[in-house]
Image (tube, rainbow, N blue to C red; front, side):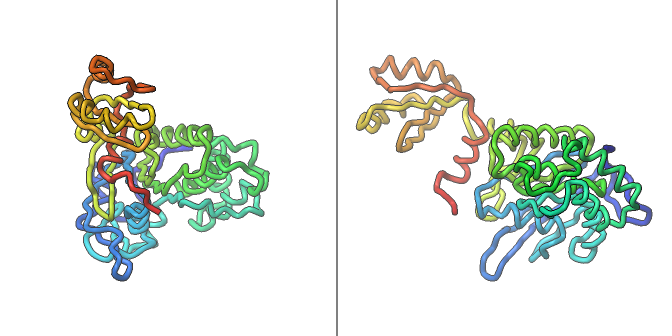
Length: 324
């Protein structure tokens, strides 16, 4: 499989070769009285893997649907591949690859037939479609299943097939909405490997996820969204440095002992978080903090020192309250 060409079809508008592929300024999406996206600014560079991270209802999918020219913009400025989604939707969609949350595959057709039918939507010549089917199925490790029906495939296989389908038109920008939701860890890692290889080949990725490890693995840059707004932006490493300490010490105490330990722990930490089952001590030196816990006469039942992660950043910025 070849990487998407940097030169668009003859006569098609194109952004500058070094300019951003997506530019949003003051982007708003409303559904009646509900504001799903509340005035966000976003730029996505060519060849970048850019992520929207946030809890359910944060506005991630609504933003992706506007970028994909399937949901109209309520207010603000949006250009994708140099095109206006409001007036040039068909031209834009022809140059995008889309991996939706749901697989939307035809269960009664074979793996290859699903790709062939999708290729016809883009008016690709049959010889080109046949060539791309072979290349793409090899890329997503489904070549041996090309004549299998879709229905009995595993969830991971189906997601890889959806990615292959999204690449049939050799897109300039690949949109992935929660690409690994519902997959087991092994299937997720296989999918991450395929997406990482696409990034290495120069494909621009734009994805939404609520998996912190996925964002750390795949994204060069990301924004954290909450209640329709962007609350932080940067690379995973930059966000951790800005919004968390270097390490976290997780302490568990016997029943009824945690509350009495908190005042002492607060003296040891840059930041302290008390949860129902444990206390999190945020510090730049976890080993020293753990040693001091024992030196001050506290006896936790377990002590775990770990590095800070994007999940710590996410929970600090968006809270721990469950969002349905």
